[in-house]
Length: 214
Image (tube, rainbow, N blue to C red; front, side):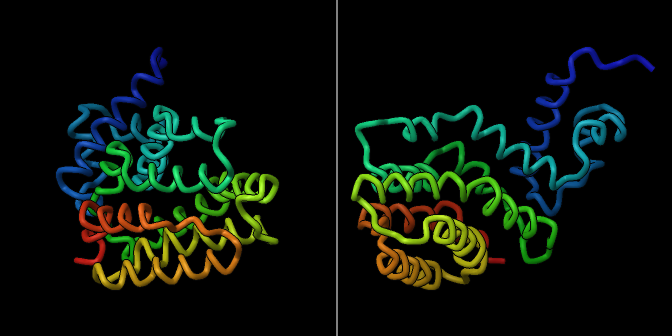
């Protein structure tokens, strides 16, 4: 069997086609066979690069973060830890590329593998970034939280799963974030200013309402 001389190009094609199908048909209604048929390659070739449909979705997010400039602000010496945290969350909620991926119709409650993936990436991958900003804020005086690691992990789990997935209406969604606002304020992390709350409301209109409608 001839070896693939361009594995990165093949992987890119698989991701491009998968993203198009996920957007058109919804994640739940797109099968690996649909992806295989659209690509015109064997199922074995797809599984050589990605072990599952969940793995493809995970790599779509990874590719976005690698290609985007979202994390450039982490190295900006003119911003405090609090300012960096606010801007990072705002970008997560308003960046068009991120919104396109978040907008893929997915029934998380019917897919425990995706729930586990979201939980794992929240704690393993994203929480250390938030922890770093909390520690920076403690050092520069813009924040005052005694538990930066625990606060980062619990904050992301509540944000991504509890509020992000298990909200059933705009009122429910925003009430959860008002609770998170009060909780964060009590922990010395006053990140939810009015601009961020307005961005959350717009995010619900663009993306989150699709989850509450399921």
